Image (cartoon, rainbow, N blue to C red; front, side, top):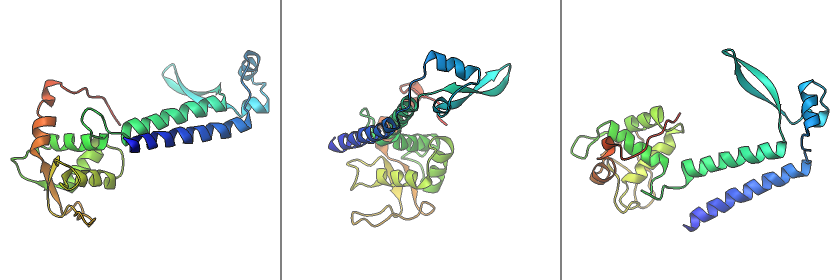
Length: 208
């Protein structure tokens, strides 16, 4: 809990720093008269610096049009949306199951590959490729590290993945490369987290 609070404070501090830098430039607000000047092409340098290009569809074709923006408002809005996306989409585990999106995507990919506890193991590289190709637009190292962590009984009180091979040790020995190790779902994951997905127990949403 304290770690999550420190993480949130860091994001707020970063946002405050960016806003203070922007305020030092003092970009003036755009009045209706200045908006009219923009439309007829008679803008001064201060307003022109706050212009952006918006892509709109006109009669089935996409064209660019200039729109006025206040730098302070745009930077604040864009930064906060990006920060909240990172916090909610990567950094903070979901309170309902304690999983981050990468963990959830790994387990779902293994479920789709039918890596049941009673079945055989599959190469971790195959699982990582499935996750990267369909669900998680990030590096393979991040996915494999999360997979390894879910299989370590000295990290998880109850492992969610059953690993076969060298998955590291309590003495911080690194795991073997993903091309050498194998995995399948642990019984807890299969029975408690994934068994009822076919009954629409979880809301799905499109990703990349």
